[in-house]
Length: 43
Image (cartoon, rainbow, N blue to C red):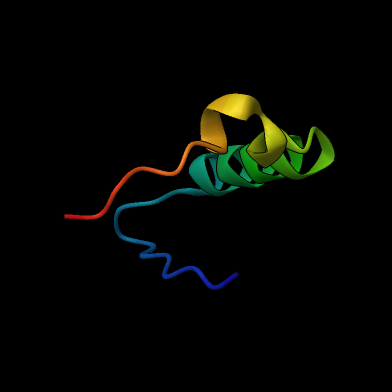
């Protein structure tokens, strides 16, 4: 993953929170939940 972090707007606390959230998604395999497996039609 690549992130564009702008130090004028984003502080250390926000970066750490984002890293914690990404860790939670990866460790919990959140993307495998049924609600994320639905494929919608493209129009």
